[in-house]
Amino acid sequence: MLNKYVNLYIMEAQTIETVWTILPALILLVLALPSLRILYITDEVSQPSITVKTIGHQWYWSYEYTDFMNVEMDSYMLPTSDLLPGDYRLLEVDNRMVVPMQLEIRMLITAADVIHSWTVPALGVKVDAVPGRLNQIGFTTTQPGIFYGQCSEICGANHSFMPIAVESINTKSFMKWVSNFTQ
Image 1: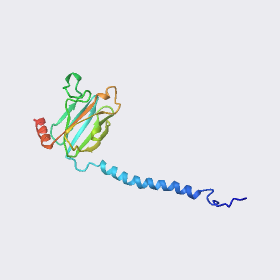
Image 2 (image 1 turned 90 degrees about the vertical axis):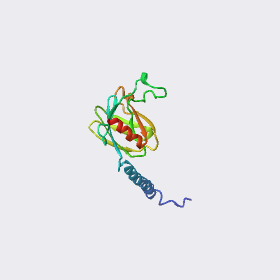
Image 3 (image 1 turned 30 degrees about the vertical axis):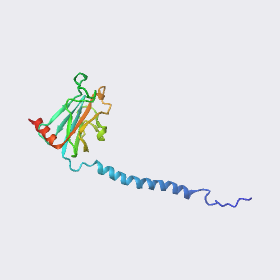
Image 4 (image 1 turned 180 degrees about the vertical axis):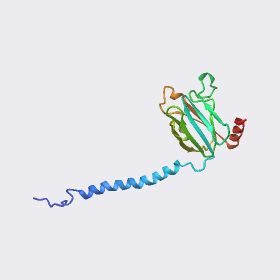
């Protein structure tokens, strides 16, 4: 008897439920649209300086430098008996992929047998190598060094024995490496 029915129109609360349903959806759209645009822009490989085709095999990687004639190699994991002091076990390879630093590199990645994944965490690169499909990724190294990775796809019993070693060197040294490789 003492109730004044102050909240008489809020009992069903259709207005407030509509507001707290639509408002978060609008906030998510405001956040998502610029993020999707940036994601799309960063995925583009605009003007690559060098293209490297990478082919995943069981249990090694093949690299083909398509901008140069006859520059291709297979990269196998070094056995423990061949390691030098300071080399990383299960990460060192016989032929490193060599790239010039501060230039955009385009990687075309595929596989010859099963699904692999070309992953180098220090470069922020992880791309699946799928048979019959050519995936593309671009990256740039800003400093010289050796960057290690492994196949991160469970592609068989020895998938952890497919290391990746990317050596980043200056452009002059890279051109010298290419000229020595083709001779």
